Image (tube, rainbow, N blue to C red; front, top):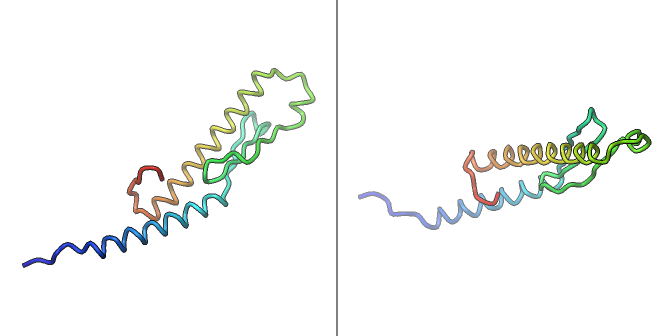
Length: 106
């Protein structure tokens, strides 16, 4: 006759996984990624938790008669690239903990 289902062991494993995930999320909050657009004229800094921390605009852009729409496009491009890099970083860190298992909301 086979062993019974070990609900206690399963609960313990789930608890350990939750602790690891919490640790990774805390680490991600302290990590940042950068992305730029316009040849480095606009740079966005985003945390591993997808929070935009900073947008830097090269002062030469502000000193010249720059098209507002172009500047807006550069900011959007830099922020979107930084957000993608942040998501990639989070996926890599989470995959290391979960063995590639995708957990909704993580």
